[in-house]
Image (cartoon, rainbow, N blue to C red; front, side, top):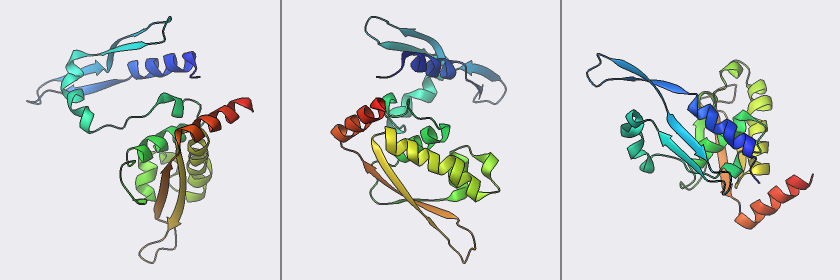
Length: 180
């Protein structure tokens, strides 16, 4: 089961984030918070979130351009990079074949700037831990292969292989994890 305290913390984290919006004419800037109000019904566990009304124009077109997943797939993850990589790979879920990207782009998307200079550190502390979390806790199974292009001496591309895990298998996997 999803931890109630973790859900509250996640909602608070989003509610505490703000963004500067510039008016269409460029003359004013407004600081807005994403969430205006969040209400949790303790009796049935439902959550109601009201976004700030000035955010609506930016949120209305999201149905076509967002990645949807269940929180149960990320809440048990221990690595913040696991969550970021899961979201990234989940966004490619409907595409067939391998997902190829540059390692620099992956570092940027995973917010791993501190590992910019040493690939072995990025691989050990971010990438491999993220893959481990995704494979252990989520509805995806992920593997990868590193490649060198343009006669490079160092790896500069990564190829991800992503497979959906059968729902029953995912539930069993999570139950086995909870027993440990």
